[in-house]
Image (cartoon, rainbow, N blue to C red; front, side, top):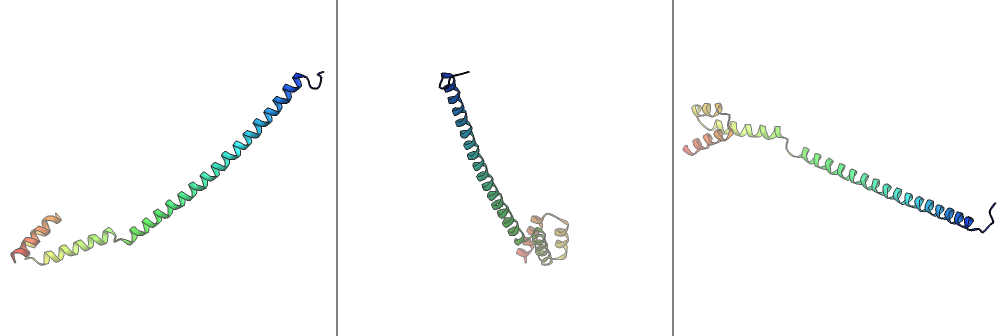
Amino acid sequence: YRKPGSSVDTAIDLSTKRGAEVVIATEKLTKRIQVKIAKAEKKAKQYKEEVGKLVKDRNSKKKETRPKAEQKLENVKKQKEALEAIDLEDRILAENNTDNDTIIETVLDKIRDM
């Protein structure tokens, strides 16, 4: 049996009080960390949504620009028109050469000669 107010009781009381303070401080810290995590998750979600919107906008703009197939078709039409502007012999030579630069040079040479 211990006398109330003995040094052992005082030490136990202080220890219990200190332990309770540590528990309370830990709980407060845990809550602050949880709040920070929630804010970070919210921000991450916002960033993800913004990036998604930017990607969606970029993709929709790509669709607005002319597709490659359309550009190739236009280039082929231009080559055909240029080949039709020169005589048959040179056209055959140009058509057999698949290098676009050579075809254009041949056509330009013939147009200059005209």
